[in-house]
Image: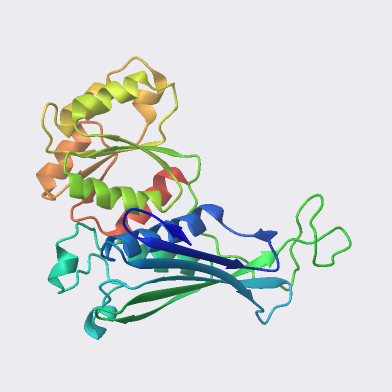
Length: 296
């Protein structure tokens, strides 16, 4: 048991097979979101536990990893449990609503689990806490004889195993996110970050321009640019980037992010050198499609 200034934290790991094939980044993202929620919605002095265990799936070449995050915090009403996986869903519990959050953590966790052909389940009761259970079937690495065991050399996967899902993995791609609103920044960070992309942030157009100028050629693969910002707006920032004397300044995709969706606004973004437009509030499906189009 670990004790911190605010919470008790209990960790239990009980797995037989430790050499498994899986998406490390997305599993880390699931753990981060579940544990962050537990910390936020458990009062000082409360208890949080993380349990990772293994059970046998139907396919003997795989291992079912069971991740359980449990707390004794505020808990959830039955009504909110029905909506918790809806984007931007907020509880009607005033204690919860006093804590800043985007309402995107749980939809993202479910989406990540599904990408890996897994599942998530919730058990919760008001003032008694919550229990989140994620189950993932991961392929075991195999030795050169084809028997399950210690892996040596190039990893091989049993042809009869369920093929892993092909998630949107943009690990290694770099995105410059330009946004002056803290809540909008948090939402975009959570959505884009779940794809594995590395994100740098700027709070206005001038800061974005300076970050781009200071970066090596070809450093950024995509720029998301808010339009209405102090110091320098997004249109002027896009023009300034396009005018730089470097090859990537002319080719890097710049996508406008704005609540202004009239034809003249989209036309103005195009005239400033932008390649597309994502309306606010951000639609998860449209954002994914934009990332796929420009980062694939």
